[in-house]
Length: 183
Image 1: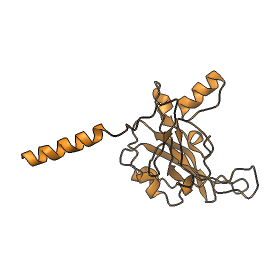
Image 2 (image 1 turned 180 degrees about the horizontal axis):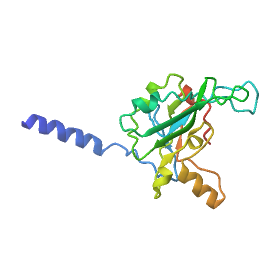
Image 3 (image 1 turned 30 degrees about the vertical axis):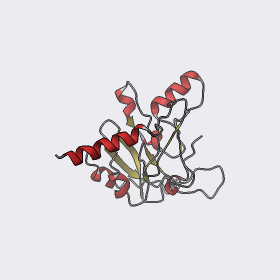
Image 4 (image 1 turned 45 degrees about the vertical axis):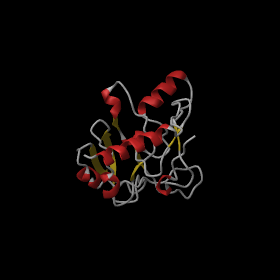
């Protein structure tokens, strides 16, 4: 390591000294999420033809996401679909869909492996909690339209206030999350 390399390193340090810091007073100010950020998993639905009604779930219970997960964090149990009242458009649906967030490494392999686009890495990053059981997210916790993590929803219910997320999403950045509503 020569004097020239040390000089370059010190130059970078000195140039950063005079720049304005990029600090957000979290949680009072909301953080802006970058377009490629991948956070809490979301299970998407097909669009509904009827206004105000939820569409069918996209997950067909194929377990490809569980097979692709390098951390073995996903558990899927499939069941036969009722033709009279289908849950998903396929022959089967995921009767049990769980992700252990303590094991998840947020690699996005489940999102890549899903043939129907049912699993999407969302924008939520606030998932800290003290209870182990609240880190295992069930299908009901991940479906589109469920806002906030389990601890956030629990605290909001305890205080009688709506869930407040500590981030804002730029408009039109993630078309695969267009059914997800953030305040």
